[in-house]
Image (cartoon, each protein chain N blue to C red):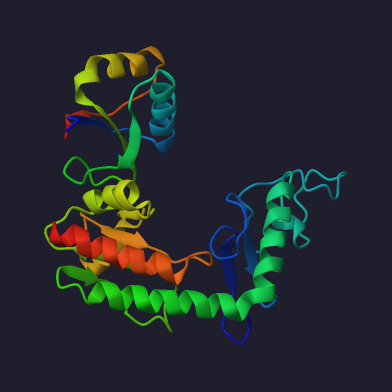
Length: 197
Length: 73
């Protein structure tokens, strides 16, 4: 945290860490003065039961209510699984992202957004195809090729304004740890077929 | 080819509920990405057989599923 200059690190359990949805975390650096920060929710920490006041101790100050134990256990199992394979997972996703970006960028009708550099990006690829609605591509990927993606604005209208894709949005593909090279080849072939028709 | 209609919803949970109800009642209903010509919403819509428009709408109305707009595709 210190070497990367991070004060607060918020994360979600279901992205890359293989945890279930509904669990996440907030890591606060020891160097942060938490005294002026008011918790959003107070009470039910299970500590200092005699007091009407929210405890100031960490982490109780920000951990009101009943913890999501099922989510925490699931996230723990996910993190343990990922930690054992960390490097190979990253390499796998990097390789898939690279071939997906290259395959898509080689299709003349397709515009791939972002850096096109799998070394400096996460395994998420956003693109559009000239003359095709993103919703049409998404539906056909699902129905004709059994490939799931998310199309549109991804609940991030500001990001789409920045890359110039508002309000139509983009098609977003994300090679996961269980995606194979064959899946990527099928995806590229599918997009090729769709933009031709 | 089947003539499709599409129903838009304000919430994802209404869309999921609508699909569940209609499939259970034997209608060909499927959740699809919201066609961009109808909305730039963040979400999903329900596709159905346009010839069953009236029945589909009444199933959803009877179950008090809140819908937005209905369109022919």
